Length: 298
View 1 (cartoon, rainbow, N blue to C red):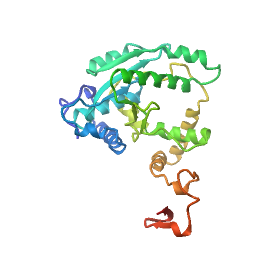
View 2: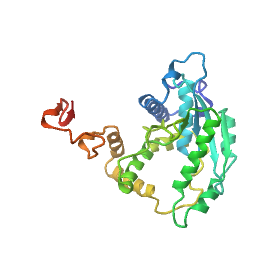
View 3: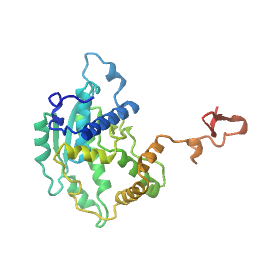
View 4: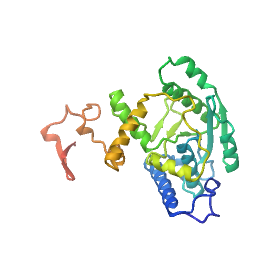
């Protein structure tokens, strides 16, 4: 799949020539392509359109390891003719103290990546509105998302593309389970409330460790995500520590749990909105040949 060093997108210039990195790069690109195809992130009209402009994706770049990996992988797929979309990278500078505002513009210019840099001081709003001792993350995320939707509309984009990976999705599931009382997580594809934009997460199948290894191997200028100050006791950090412990005791546990999110059985849960328990009778049961314990309604 990988070509010689001279036959490469600028985002991959200087890539390590080790076998380990080549396998890592191939795996990350393959998993992103699988997610894009599995969850229908490329609209059918775009696959078969002739003559018309392709859809445009607003790819959100925070400067963290995940968003750099996302940007590189999408350009890899586009460069290889596997992703018929235009890509516009976007960084939203939210006015966090100490944010290195010149890093991302210089990087994107050097890489020849079309981009838009937007400054909106949402940090001051969050500090003013959130009571002392409470975490900033929820309000900060809402303000950021609203601005990104606006930018996507202004740029004629059909989708906002985010760098959440497999571990983000798994952690969100357990946060909802432990604290929200519901079975839910970040979906790989959704439509915003206004109904005019898609939100995609092409790294849905990619492990956080692989994003970290990839971005660091490429020596991308990673910007830390703790510029707003360390806030102890964040629910996500607590969940992450729990998952780290499970993974340490049983390597591969994260991937097993992630596969469970792709293998839901409504008839074996308790939500009557998902399965017609009231209508279930002895006469209506038909056993699945592969699993005789799983009844299905005719």
